Image (cartoon, rainbow, N blue to C red; front, side, top):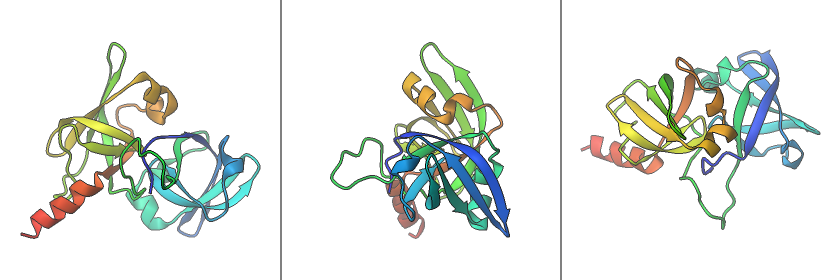
Length: 195
């Protein structure tokens, strides 16, 4: 489980295909604190650390992960939002995030405002995947509040701290992002649809 509060960037150092898997070697200032077998969120995708060497570590994405997320689009040099699993007994500053991406979305608008940024995303409408005004959404692993909810799109407002400390600063119109919809909302929606 994660909170959606990004700790650092991880920079893609190398990509290696092996069968249908993609081994992703990343560089992070927190790499020395990682352990083999540890779960870490990368752009909102929970992946297991399989190797570590000083400032570098490696995770593996399988075919299903590559098909359902934007990890298959990564290039060497890309910055990835990085978060270690939450610790029990500490504050939950974002919201409950599983690290299980529901689907991807496309950025259809990016607007610089006076002191903040507004991004709009469009996604394929699925009955269980909904947003609500002032509800929670995870975009590339970042816990955010929905400011404009439509049937298959929504907007979020980004404060300067989030802009500078996540890969939102590199996000442009047309780019694909990972979405994880609010866990509680998904359960309620599923129960409602069964009626």
